[in-house]
Image (cartoon, helix red, strand yellow):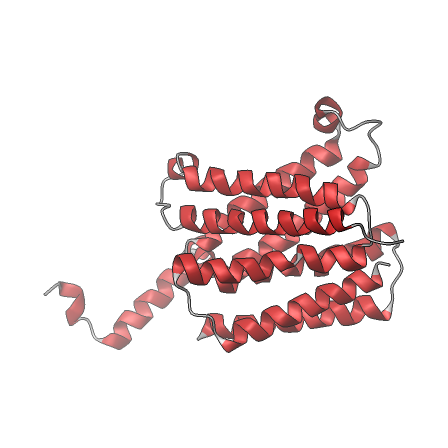
Length: 144
Length: 117
């Protein structure tokens, strides 16, 4: 029997709570759904930067792509979001976490309206609402 | 404007390859330890990233022609394949919430396709 097993259950909970507060990064790593959501925000930012950059370069050769700050930053953000996704996938079900990536559609649509002044219409509004609700329903399994 | 069968095929192929990217990333992720080097020396993660790159090439080739209204939801089929592989390779439970959530996501993406016409 280890010494920890003699600690009362309540005291154990208090200790865990304090550890939780002390290391926010460690705590974040435990919340896979939140991590994947962060991934989608970064991924959407990457897509917007790639769109801006793509309209600036004369032709799509590797040197033009690397020298364009928007494209360079866009690809760097993609790399960051991939690393976050990998960290998120360490814990939790793929079948639950992967569909959360569809939130990227939501951010990209909103950013496209704000930055590129793309048209707003009821289809987009309804589409976004249904996606968010769908992710919400998936999220109920994460808590279970 | 009509959507050529070749575009539909390319986009579905892209979604299929991309779904294996997710499988490899998951397979690699569970083998990670608290040492950043395990992020580098991990063939599954490399295979996952590779699958995504290949998938994006097919996707871009596919959406060059045809209507996004059709092709957008086709690309989103990748979520459905991933659900199947989660069951097959990782023996994850497929709950009612997962099916309802995923169906809503696919409908929402189809709506966005209409909105982007």
